[in-house]
Image (tube, rainbow, N blue to C red; front, side, top):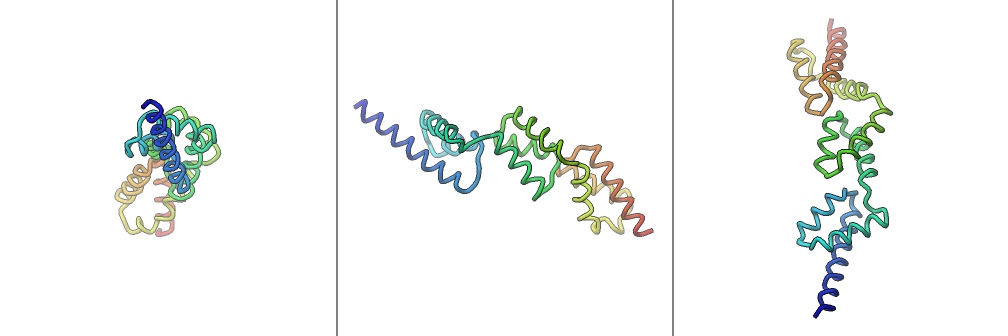
Length: 169
């Protein structure tokens, strides 16, 4: 009876591994995302731990690499500020110390104000013809929703308004 139980556990682990490898063929996942996916499928904790152990041995799951790639891709495809990046990485289960280290490294290489400026300049036509207060409020709100810090949002909104005002005036 005991060997039968061991065999079933091994079968569950093999099924879990196969499932996770299919997931990883589509995109990268954090350890927490994989745990949640396996738990959601009803796998026992032992099978989940064995599967994660195998993935770590084979370097198929790495939260640091995931966070770095996520941040770099997000900055390229949907520019966001630090607060939004932190929120999205926490939601995916990346530990706080990894988030801080990766964001410090990646954001040290770029000028977040330039990213915010490019983002708003691409939307500048939306603010033409509005009053100064209304335009600044909308720009500030947009950058805030994208997770940019208050000081960056305020400075960039002022710069964009100055350019719009100079063009119109």
